[in-house]
Amino acid sequence: MNLLHIDSSPLGTASVSRQLTAEIVRAWRDADPGTKVVYRDLAAAPPDHLTGELMQVVKFRNLEHLNQRQRDELALTDALVDEFLAADVVVIGAPMYNFSVPTQLKAWIDRICQAGRTFRYTETGPVGLAGGRKVIVASARGGRYAGTPMETAIDHQEAYLRAVMGFVGITDVSVIRAEGVAMGPEVRAKALEAAGRDIERLAVPVPA
Image 1 (spheres, rainbow, N blue to C red):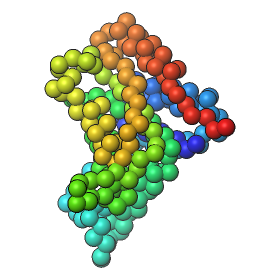
Image 2: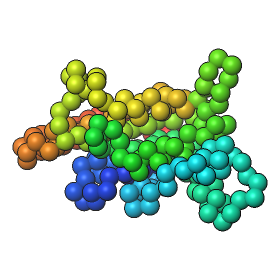
Image 3: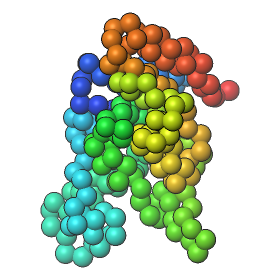
Image 4: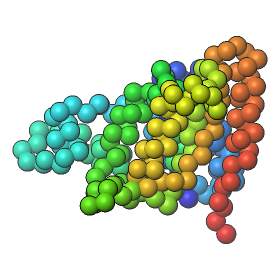
């Protein structure tokens, strides 16, 4: 079992999403000690956002007359896609920032959505090529939104991640959520306790 562990919060030890991803990975390895973990900290080493120049290279694969920066960015993109496709399970730490995901996580998503590798276009629309793996999103939110009309209107975090993963063919997406973590110590503690129970209930497929 190969597990890709992604963190995106820049808050370090103060990050709730990092705490949740660490607990998820720990629970997974406890259930399957043979799990091989690859860790990528997108806050510590964020991929560059796609400029017009980089779009030509890493998205449209115009590979003639590349300079060193372009070659490096192409190699990074291919490495990120390789990591993603090598994983049986992907654990993504995704705090809600202004109703969306951190910019570092968006930059990673822009790299792994690669035509011909994780999806392809057909006459009837896009087809995902990265199915057959599981994604677990560790979601941290300062307020409470789940199940409310406000969430329906403004959720460009969890809903976005489900949509992106579905686009590349992944339908097995679980969300471990801690809500209200900025609403005081008591609310935060209860949110983490509830998330801990959800982590304990995760179904970990252990090889026979």
